[in-house]
Image 1: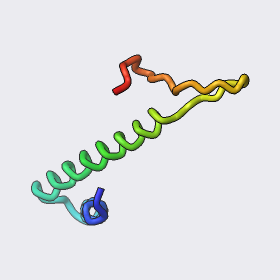
Image 2: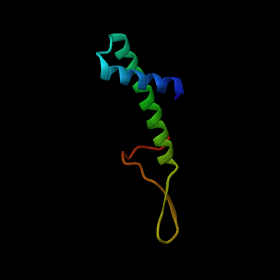
Image 3: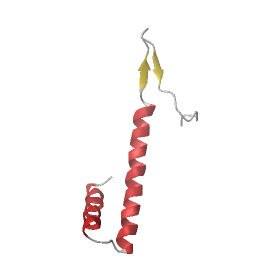
Length: 72
């Protein structure tokens, strides 16, 4: 996510502590938060999909998915 968008998220959070956000500001904040969370989840998923568990005998196994779904 671009630094300017992160700065805007933080600016809106500070404004929300000081006063009630307008409808447009609240909508912008919600959209930016959704975009941020989607990127964060994608990054976390990428890390977990590239994580291996090493057993005591030295074998490497991919970290299993909790939801039982297929890897993409």
